[in-house]
Image (tube, rainbow, N blue to C red; front, side, top):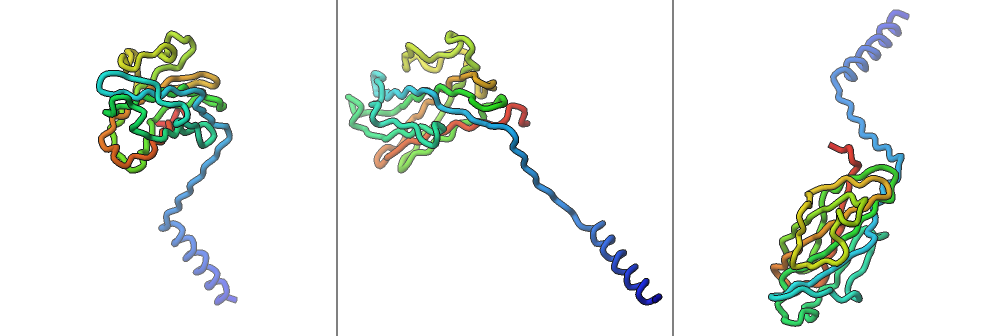
Length: 186
């Protein structure tokens, strides 16, 4: 009987001691709301040496449930064949339940390289606050831009992205995805 009690005591003390010295790390993710931002509209301009023109609509597509813009690149769409800059405007709507904050814009070029800058405007409660209609791409970026915006439920924002193409020899596609986090993320 004494041997059994000592054995049980040693097992309990050994377990307690090992638990005291061990580190426990718990990762828990709870997603209780819908975070849904969509590209509602877009504008794509190709800028050559001297002017800017609309990029052909049949070469631009929304993919991934309206979260990503895909541009099929062609150098023949530029009249003077010296395409160096592409301006992309994205009209983003927050269809989710909570406000979201723009954290950045991911741009992927297939077989090419570029320098990318983006300018955020909004949130748009008044069309005059966000440059979207009647745009002259040679005047971009307009004043009043930010590096990030917080978009409430059912509000919109505009992101103008300047893509300076460095290597277009084998460039196939340009893929653009803005990414957002909950507004209160540090």
